Amino acid sequence: MQEVSRAEAEYRGKIAQVCDQAIRDGIYILLITGPSASGKTTSAKMIADELTARGQKVNRISLDNFYKNVEELPRWSDGYQNYEAVEGLDISCFEEMVQRLLREGHANFPIFDFTTGRRAAETINLTCDPHTFLIIEGIHALNPLIFKSVEGFSCMKIYISVHSDFVDGQGNILLCARDLRLIRRVIRDFYYRSTLAEDTFKMWDYVLRGEDLYIRPFRKYADLHINSTHNYEPYLYHDEMVRMLLACTPDSPYTPIIQRMMAASSHFFHMASELVPDSSLIQEFLKPKSWK
Image (cartoon, rainbow, N blue to C red; front, side, top):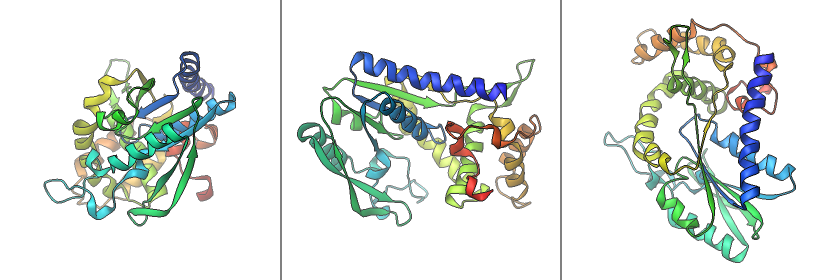
């Protein structure tokens, strides 16, 4: 329990430091990015909540709401839909909405319906004044095509990811940072998107390819890098991950990944999810309480 409390306090401290700096320096636009399953969305919510608790006005804008309709998305060379490319976003709409919000103080932002793969009829009306914090979050938040919409304003650019490998006493890697993100993604996809582990493994190759092409090249622009690793995570995910791996088909084309993940899981033991506070970033990657 002490390890959980210590890790949670450490991450809360990182969130508080972001807010301290933004308020102290009068930086009202925060651009938050990171690769898949890095915890960027929940971190953006935590920053928004912390600023609100300090009496600040906050709007949080998700770039996911600016996806083009599914039939307009670009495709990889094999024909598979490319959800990772910045060209999948309606950048002109984003630029128009953000500039209108900053110039006129209000704008109606779109909502993307992922169940239909299309923009919803409803919109979100946001209002803004010179002392309203805007948190813009998404995998392309540091891309110059997005950044140009707020050029000329003071911005804080934040890159969130899992930066820590888990190693033994001799320095051997037991679980690498990318595989921790994959475990997070497998569990989250299963409970929140009804996606089996093998389907997540299929998407993961495209996700990593997209990161190398569209996300990592721009992390050099970040003002802050936040490591979202919580040191108790592998224990917390152990039972769920083993169960999902054992459910994969015996002749799965992803057998090398399954074997690698099973080998990594063998180094950890079960930890009860009840030890994790409701306010934790890690709740994003746990079985919803409604399933229990």
